[in-house]
Figure: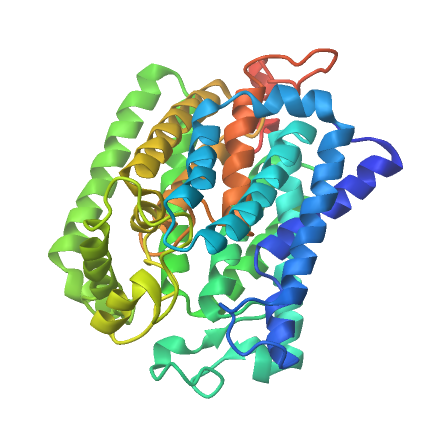
Amino acid sequence: MKSKGRFGALEKVFVVSALFLFSGGLLTLVRQMSGAISDPSQTDPVSQAVFLLVYGITACLTVIWRKRFAHVVTRDGLLWLLIGIALLSVLWSAAPEVTLRRSIALIGTTLLGVYMAMRFDLREQLRLVAWALGTGALLSLLFALALPAYGVASVESLPSESSEAAQGWRGVYQCKNCLGLPMALGALVFMLLGLSEHRYRWISWAGFSLSVILLLLSNSKTSLVVFTCVLLLLPLYRGLRWPYSIAVPFLISGVLLLGSAALWGLANEGTVLGLLNRDVTLTGRTDVWSAVLDMIWERPWLGYGYEAFWQGWEGPSAYVSIVVGFAPSHAHNGLLNLWLNLGLLGVVAFALGFLRTSVRAVQWARLGKVGGVWPLAYLTYLLLYSVTEVTILTRNSITWVLYVTVVLSMSRNRAKPPRESTAPAYPNPKYQGRAAG
């Protein structure tokens, strides 16, 4: 489905701006530079107002396209089961007012993903994401060169950090890891567009090159590892389109090769971690995980309520803060953080939905539909990032927006909405190269 006319252009400008905002770009850093906030985790009324404006515009747009909204929003029950559990968790939350307020933000974030799924096909979505992350990359480059005191994170600019691992570019983002995450995603998106688009292909490869350069300059080892893993898996995903007689041996060989590499890495973890400038605790993450597991067993079934656990040195997170010696803002693991929030009930709901979406993504790549391997590549990116960061059910986050979009986009195309044509699936093999990825 193509968005046409001036209104369609304005829609795209809004989506690109919202994605850039949800990627963490500029807003929080500018507020820090102005001295309005000293701690990025604290509540900022201006930032809240900006996000509320985005939610309001998104809600208005969904009302305008309400027939399409009704069709798309009902296509995946497991996704809404997970959202429903998060909303209901206010009933057993350790901090009901926090859960209620942040649940509203979660609804607004999810709504943007729904809107993207109902207005743009997967190829258009890739382009919009490329515009948003390309804008972040270009601004980060200019920001770091023009204002290095703010655009480059160092021990001096981050007094809470004391090691060289804290140093690196952060551009228009809060920290070096906050730059690494969108740049790894941007490099993936630009590469898929460069491999599939024929017009202005040089722009895609220029965006890819800039994203990779900023990824390296950010010194974000997690982002670099995730991007490298997805990059190595892409040939296997693209091989899904081949005839079974070729695809099956190729996939088996690829799995064996990657499995051997993983086993070698486990057997030589000291060497690998040394190359990444990390210790066996993954910069203290394993200590956090151990303390988090202790608290999970206190309330294993329903958790502490959506985003009600992490309250610094107060509330239930005080135990973790005492054990590790500082106040983490999250569990540094997506599933553990979800378990704290919504208990085993929420973890099972997400796992079932993720598994079903992954199966659909494999089928999507196999049939060479619009968007190609993008859904499968993004799910891999999300899962790998969740090992050490929080990307699942996160409010005001591009990772959750894109997850919702991918889930509902594949579901949407399983059935044709009334009086609306879906994007072509390229059944003719000579056109399959046009599908992204």
